[in-house]
Amino acid sequence: MSIEIDKLLEDDWESVRRIYLEGIATGNATFETEAPDWKSWDRTHLETPRLVARRPDEVIGWAALSPVSRRRVYAGVAEVSVYVASEAQGIGVGRRLLMALIEQAEQSGIWTLQAGIFPENEASIALHRSCGFREVGRRERIGKLGDMWRDVILMERRSPDVP
Image (cartoon, rainbow, N blue to C red; front, side):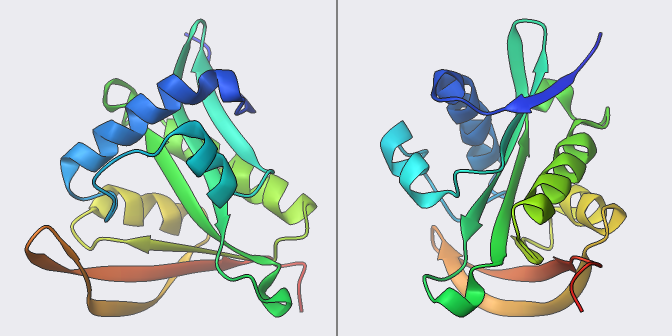
């Protein structure tokens, strides 16, 4: 079955939210414990790129960027979010989304992408590595998820077009 990478639209929100909730439920995808409403999510993510992976008639993954700072000097630095529906994991959807996100981010003037990933999320670490991200450090006990302190592996990818 063919998979298309497409622009994420407001009409996709319920599917995107469902996939986000699946990630939240794993306990290894995010510190978030609830998915926001569309307006909140829209306000906290860059307008472009925002992508979905579609099979005919269904969204099976999404990727988007969030600014890391409001300071002008960091305008070309963004944080990556990539989520794939549980039934579509392991077939290359995440890689296709992340590679398309990288390409469109660079076209939009983003020179550094970063991702904070729980060390237990080995699949996400491997995905980011395969797309040119490198580990730049481990943020120990950076935050609590429930009652448990969690570490985060900080990964980044710098555009080769930026000196």
